[in-house]
Image (cartoon, protein in one colour):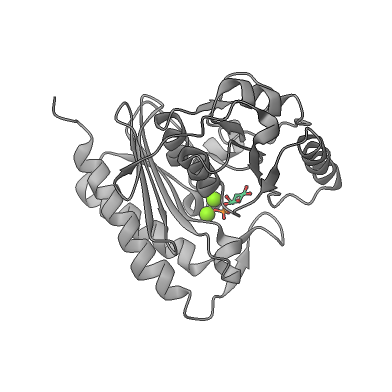
Amino acid sequence: MADLWQDAMDHAVTAARGAGRQVVREALREDRKVMTKSSSVDLVTQTDQKVEQLIIQSVKEKYPTHRFIGEESVAAGEPCVLSDEPTWIIDPIDGTTNFVHGFPFVAVSVGFSVNRQIEFGVVYSCLEDKMFTARRGRGSFCNGQPLQVSAQTDVGQSVIATEFGSNRDPEVVDGIFSSLRNVLAIPVHGVRSAGTAAINMCLVASGCVEAYYEMGMHVWDLAAASLLVTEAGGVLMDVEGGPFDLMSRRVIAANNRSIGQRIAREIRAYAPVRDDAPAHTQ
Ligand SMILES: O=P([O-])([O-])O[C@@H]1[C@H](O)[C@H](O)[C@@H](O)[C@H](O)[C@H]1O
Ligand SMILES: [Mg+2]
Ligand SMILES: [Mg+2]
């Protein structure tokens, strides 16, 4: 059967690869002017803004009725609304801190939802030149090769990915360290941070790490890579073990439910302001 959204997915792949190669990689050769958003460690550059505008413009020309949730557009005051309409969910640079410092994990992330369900996800890891793609019901791939989550069932033989985010509120930082301590003390083989939520989730999809958890990231960090995880055979859940909610800013992405639930028991959960809270949705 013909795939209704194949053209759109092809467009996302071309746009993400083009932006990653021609804009992000080129910008890494030059001085990067750094600005801040919600706090002094929440960074943004002109490259983030340029990539987002390039992708949105190219999509608008082809699909004039489609909607957008873009990280830098929301930062500039655009609403953050996930409706039933076809919606492109864009993180122009996931891993901006990495980008600023030249730490080599930087991704362009493009998810696409219809009826609030992710139809395809594209994550281009710009420096590794890896194109991660997933189409709902049709599997996950890296540079065209199928991906499969790890078969590990013993959490004690697992590597877990997480991030420290950009919230430096002492209570939030204490919670992050308390969760990290508990996870390490399971004990697991190790804990890793790629510096980008999307690439952490692609690592789960690739079978290199068994689970990734974080609180405080946003829908644009997760949208595309969430499908990479499930299409590679993994599961998504809330940090307290309940159903995953794309707008809640909380996630565990795991190779299987039992490892996900085991990690959930160790997390000191808090509730960040949701992405669809009124201030963001007007
Ligand atoms: O700002 P950005 O680089 O697009 O995205 C950030 C990265 O994914 C980081 O790994 C995660 O810890 C933050 O929560 C995100 O905001
Ligand atoms: Mg991001
Ligand atoms: Mg970003």
